[in-house]
Length: 297
Image 1 (tube, rainbow, N blue to C red):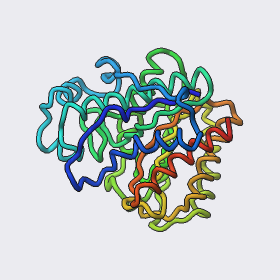
Image 2: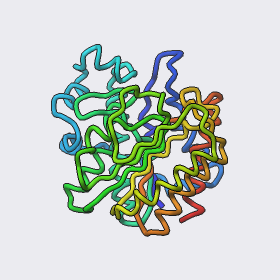
Image 3: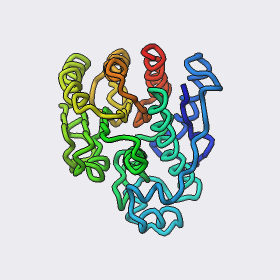
Image 4: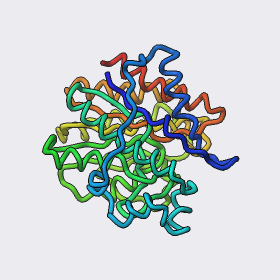
């Protein structure tokens, strides 16, 4: 199994910044320490060429990000101060998901230990998302004629407004988002199926809704599933407002991954969000996702 990582591309954020940039390094480290993955399973993400980004983003926006000429308002919406290291790391996140998608088509499953940046629009970023890795990967596979249909299963606690903005008009893409209804983003962009959850929704209701809805997604007969496996539905997450236990999150992953395996649908995972304190709760939850991958595959 090949899994792609980006944490060697460091981004130094200001003291007190609430985005847990260190989680990416910690997740890879714990995956190895707990023998969930071996060093030989892990590959550094490639930097994609500009033309690949232009499959999902406007030339003006790509060039403004890469040259550091975004407006102050555009930088504020993204939530990170601009730096050359942020550009490289954001590019690598896209490259990792593109590589994972190709690997999943080849061998059934893969993942990127980053990505899931589902708030990035074609011409702007927001919510800690610079480029939209899943939208780029989906359009890349279509351009290569590697797939005829794709599905996105987005179980991050925040609705994937960028995914739906870029891909929502395509009849060959099915987007399912299950998220906190009252949480960010406050202006949702409709997906194929959206399930907005009440604050403090727990394991039982969450897993029931997931189990009822997932067959509708997979009956679309996608050639690949992109699974945004954010762990911010965890009860302890600072930005989540839901109440899933770590066991509930693991069962969520098991339902999605097992059903894709059962139907022989390749699955490509992106890490998505996670903002618990202490950070080890987020790290362990991301690691549990890959434990489930290993169990199922």
